[in-house]
Amino acid sequence: MRLCVGNSHFAAPVAGARHFGATLLYKINSSTNARMRGWLVLNGITEIRGSRGGVSGARVSEATALWLQTMAPLAQGDTVELQGNFRAADGYFAADHTSFWGSKVG
Image (cartoon, rainbow, N blue to C red; front, side, top):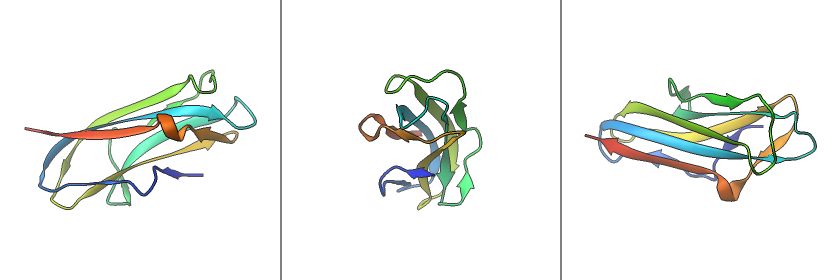
């Protein structure tokens, strides 16, 4: 399962470097063995270098979180979206505690 947070994505109004960050909060489904990971995607296709992260250690439902951050140069009109999935077992990202943010640098 891949997560694309809602239909939300960021579209760059002007070219320039951006600093992006995200938080994904783990919520148990049937097992605490779920290994969560997340990343940022440019224009719906390309993973943004340096944005991938994961949690493979012990997880506690609604307490274990994954934080991502990276910088990326964007052209006007480029889009960025947050994606994630689980390995080894099924789980959820707590929607009300998932965030995705960014800011222009310079």
